[in-house]
Length: 248
Image 1 (cartoon, rainbow, N blue to C red):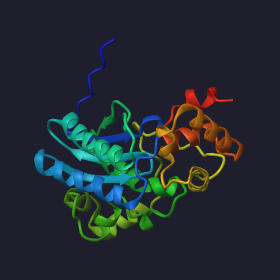
Image 2 (image 1 turned 60 degrees about the horizontal axis):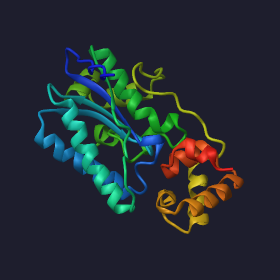
Image 3 (image 1 turned 90 degrees about the vertical axis):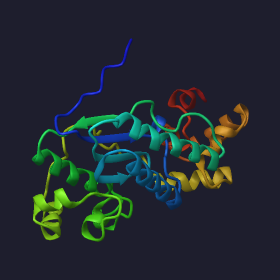
Image 4 (image 1 turned 180 degrees about the horizontal axis):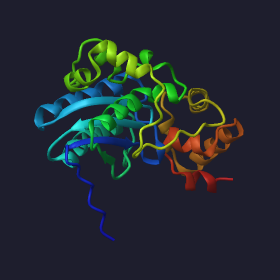
């Protein structure tokens, strides 16, 4: 069955979400976040576009882009290069991102501003930290020096940085569109990651993928007994939920 054509917007502005395959972690350490932003900058220099907002979360990425053409090529160029880097660095193979990223056209200025706020509120909504403290979103560029983003239009619409700060503090409901509501795990992901690192004697939980089946299955049994849920194992290791559920 052919894929449905991607919905185009009259303003050529899109809220894009890229997710790790099987909700796999995309950024194991800060260096990974820095490299992804470098790739974004390089792609921006190669494609006619503007970046209005971004937020790098553990297993997904939000982008708000003005791009009159080649949206698919832009996103695939960044995702493809990052996937090669990630697989090489963490000694894994296969897909890193879900096959098709999600995009929602922005049709008016009010919706654009609500998406800017929604993107920056992601870390706080996920219980990580206040938006002002999160280092991997464009919030820091709006209140400081813009490096990657094109802040002029948003700041002009909000009356400058003071207006941006006031708008960000306002109690806004999540923007409609492609974002999924967060689901809370039984234990915090950082605790599940620590346990997996301890049990596997490895820095990255994705090491599970490189083990032989019998060894992998035994480690999964141990991790399940330590209280890590199936969803967390899928998210942190990149192994599909179906495989994990079959291991008794």
